[in-house]
Image 1: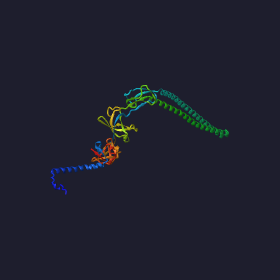
Image 2: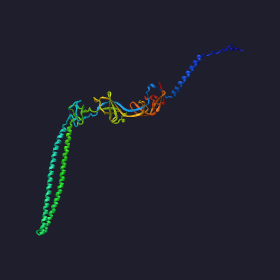
Image 3: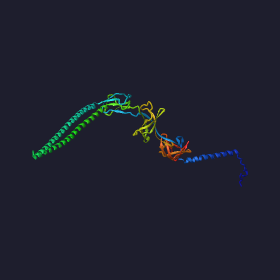
Image 4: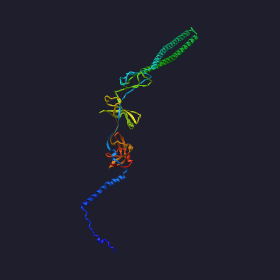
Length: 424
């Protein structure tokens, strides 16, 4: 038998745990439970989210209710509402009678064009007019002479008829008295019948002759009138060689040099009407379809704001912009100058009492159909419908409620996820 050490073992009682240690262990256990309750839901939520994005790199704005005003703001330049350019009616030598910047009155001669060809042509046509007028007068004299001759022929035929009628009357009386034979009566009646025929033909010949003479005279007078119109038109052209200012204002730019030889329809100078000014505004082509003549506008000159309205919109898009013109409706600022810069705001329309949010890249990123609504640190993808847009705000028709917050910056980092965690 091999003896073990059991006889040497002695039972020892375990020392009692102090109360302070028990409290400390209980506190630690409670803390672990609380931390687990706080971290575990977040960890579970994080595992179910599609991505995590830093909230500091995002722009988040609340959905509010109010009046949305669609407008277009841009820096415009002052231009003259009326600034005609004078052109040469024909080729020639230009003599300027004014300089750039000179003030001119309406109908004042500002330049003269010397055209020997046009002046010579006028003199030739005036000589032709005198010849045509003489022909017309000669035709009138011939017309009166021919009328007199036809009248004389009719009168002679009437006298011959009266003579023949008296001869018939005399022979009939003599025949009844037995002084003349019946054959003489028959001859007298034949003579009367011949006189009647002659008178009738004389009257018809006279009518035809009058019509022919009237036609010839009318032809001569029409030729005369045509020549008069030609001479009048040439006089007008010669008078237009003196270029006159169509408005009262100031000479703008000189387009030719003094005594320069120019061709027909060449620009000579511009005249600026300073009494009526407008503001030329470049507008993005995205707003071009919304612009309409008569829309109200506001023009800011320093600390003053002036009322205006849209007066014209260019039909052509250049470099992604269209050119619009705004005119003053009430009064114009004093001392405006050509090409002066003024801030202009065109009011397109107003939508009262609508849900709206600050405008941002999210409209273009989601084509106005998707937005991410932020709640409890999570951005949830939601279908929306965008209505009217302005430079600063966007109308939200469906998909959100007042007071909710949505991401208005670009959402490319979300990669189309349904739910995205926002890290601080």
